[in-house]
Length: 338
Image 1 (cartoon, rainbow, N blue to C red):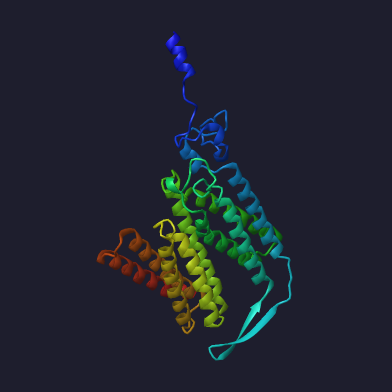
Image 2 (image 1 turned 135 degrees about the vertical axis):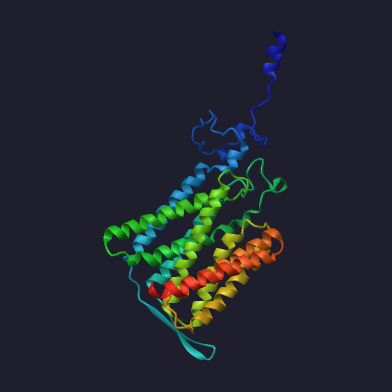
């Protein structure tokens, strides 16, 4: 009896699997998974949950950002600013750049979304250097790498601003603003799930982020190509769009940031050159946008395989070539009718 009492008195202090004392782990308090009871001290039963499930701070920051984006999209429908036309000589010929209220709002909301994404992602223990039990010696990534997560939320917010004026009624306009906030929320929660590769929701989140990245790329390619602006300007916009979204699609393939940036720049340069060439072809806006998406998909896919496998096999190249030919035939047949 005395031995049992002594054993009870000497029981170790409750710990999370990462060795974090429960009273020190309030920073990681996650929402409990479905069907689980939250512990009395507010800490989940595992340190993995602390890294995998969003904390209250994360949810609060995502909520603020989502409503701010929705409000900005709504305000953009009524804001009227004078249009500024900049005239300059580029490559020996005059070029005019129109800066309207849509351009100003698009730049503003992109910066706003990137800033909000930064604040939200920094709450993840993997990037929080002040987190107890996490650090560079435990596989933590430097906090500066959080900028790798900016591309997709910024692209979606820009698409929302550009497409919102297409809504014909106040009801649809309000719905488009709310939809933009909802999309930002979904994206940020899925970005959180892909910070750590062994997260239970990593695979599903990665698939959804890939789909949204390609959808954002298609929307921006269509919007830029249909303007039929000077090749220098449109190609630069395509280059920036493709590079940012390529970073999102490749950031989890390798931890070497310089390699990711190199491949993203390469894909962006290829897309910019293709856009420049397509401007001389009598293609419809839909056909040009779909062709740009096809090239983007092929080069991003080849880059992912090259980074993951270390080389490109003949079988893989033939597979992508066959897909490209089939997609090209479909674009030629269907594109002009869109």
